[in-house]
Length: 72
Image 1 (tube, rainbow, N blue to C red):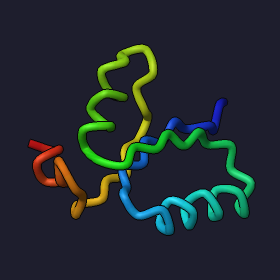
Image 2: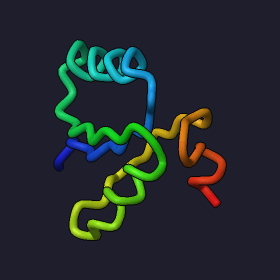
Image 3: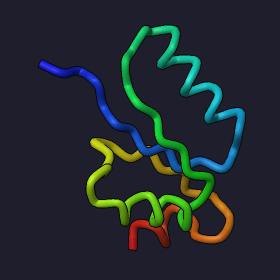
């Protein structure tokens, strides 16, 4: 069984990104974190149908396309 997840992290705050990466590293998890700084970048990533994430972590307060608009 493969426990590695592809996680799409949509977050514009670099400190929050570093926190998640530190937790993943500290817990020695083998997850692949794909980072997007805003909703527009995330949509571009999601258009690549061959590399869809297993889970998406979404910030609601972001520039350009916020989290609520992204979900719509």
